[in-house]
Length: 251
Image: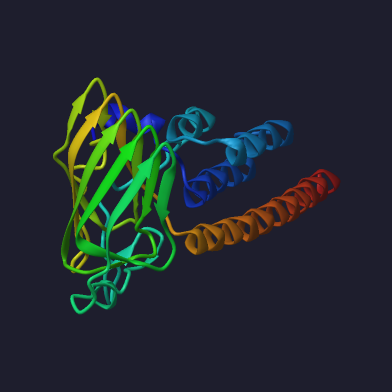
């Protein structure tokens, strides 16, 4: 990723806190009056990107927020994914289980989701119908599984969890194979999924999603963090106004 992309990157809560600290210092040093501080303080917590944060402090010393690290560093004591501990992949690779090996949807559909085991080779056939293979909670009959798809005027959607490497080798004829997830490195010990086949006037999609429980957990944590920050901002405004009022009375 190039430096030109940095202004469009999403800012984190920690980035907004760093900018808020710059604004507090500027208020204490007399560089901003209370009205300017309030305006910029509110804008800080509404900012979504690094570019928006940079504009808020562009005329202040040390005004630019620190650029983000574009590498994912492992945490001390073990590798950690961006959203939590690494999945226990060895427990989910089950060579002792044959697993499900096929799905057919003809003028209809099929789905495999939840707790299930995908076989070493899975064949999906869809004719004027659709199918969904959700691997987020699935076990794998081998470290490498191959999904062979034939889609005629229909489609198959494959959902993989973070950490799983995907390779797409399919052929689209008046249709297409989604290869956007190709090239994303897998986690150590994670299975590898190969998607092959033919899509004739149909399509095969591959997307990466978090498991439902993980999404709900992150949503709850985010809600709690927003409530905490909102409460902290109110307390901070009250404290700063009291300090300014006290200074005026002393003057």
